[in-house]
Image 1 (tube, chains in turn brown, blue):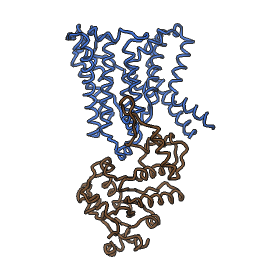
Image 2 (cartoon, chains in turn cyan, yellow):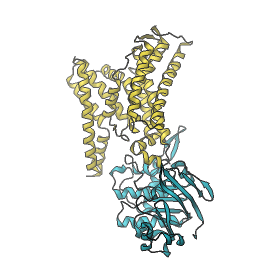
Image 3 (tube, rainbow over the protein chains, first blue to last red):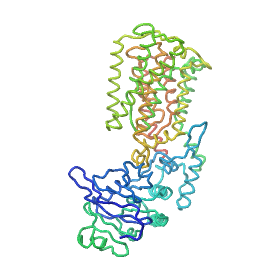
Image 4 (cartoon, rainbow over the protein chains, first blue to last red):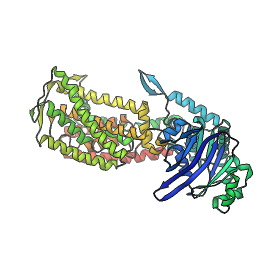
Length: 256
Length: 331
């Protein structure tokens, strides 16, 4: 099914909201160093699935294997501890604090002063400066509050943050919604670079072209089930559109 | 705009309330007879210690994006608890400890325990049961005052044990120790907010609770801690109040809540959460106190204080809006 060593295996993941079945049993595998594009119409259940993997939601059924072991994150911090980073479509930045504070959110560096842990602003600023420079992102001052930055700059910070922290699996929920053409191109390059380090990547996108540019495999979700799971090189945008709209559901299973 | 002008302007905006304080002190010193003397300034600081301490707790919770209306009643209950145990007249039981100084830590522990317990109660209802902070703490504001009334039966406790009152009598550099306690609180909590992970997380939660949660910050725990702190700090304010009045009455501290709100808002803390710093709040407290003192010296009726405080809060909010638009032009 995939030429990559499996990193995360989803096995019959279900999610109900009362009588409504948002996910009716999702199964697919994400390999180490593999980029999987998750496609589907609005309301198909993509974001729900990402939240379940990232520890933001508990599944109603099914199981996950992460690096061969049974896995369930009960909170985002548990997922992070396991090495799963998530970039959400509504950005996860606190606009009332500066770039450095956002970059290190929840992972602040401290040094001891009189035995007490004190935020090590200098060290953190140095790390951020280096990370942004190597990604080619220019931000006038790292001490600027994020509310004074443009949408593109904000998304760049968020992307650089996940590239920097890396981990083992990265989930991206429409990461390029606010980016221009050039920044999107750079973002896609970043994703490839991350995957080349052996990190698994799941990217949710609405833009077919992006999926074909960056993904090794395309997984289509329709009405809470996997409607297609195909290697990018074995399919075409038209075929994928058909899977999304449900015109060729029968053909989808075979390709997986 | 060149970087230096910009930096200067940002500095002025960030510390606007301090400039307002200086301006007000200058104007009063020039135009109010007998205003300009060290004793008056010491009095301004002394008179603001209870309100100052209470404002710290309130500011913490508001910066975290929540609300605590119960601080005034919590202070009153702590004061009443200390009063009942350690006062020798009225409803006081006049408990004697030996040695005498033991009364200080014991009374502090009583006060802090009362405050932390109510803070924890508020915090658990708000964070775990996801009840609205405004309603929960409004309820606490009412029932805690009710407990004060019930405990005291409407009567008062007088003659606090001298070992505890010592803090209100003993002076250091012209200020009573109670004022130094308030100043120390501001220094300690300012450092915590600016330099510790807890403070940083509290500010981030106030700015974007969802982002904080996704980043793995233990949002629930930090929010509950902030409510416990607000309760404990309010209790410390109550302890100072008991010392100041050498006892406790059933209506002790009435109206402090609104002054605390005024100080917090004037001090530059946004009710939306995530914005503000404690040094500014202290300046706000001093500003209110400076104005009160001027009103007293000018012999104006005390009722005018309320009108002026109200207008001052409006002015502060107006100024905040103005600051925001200037900042947007700067960016």
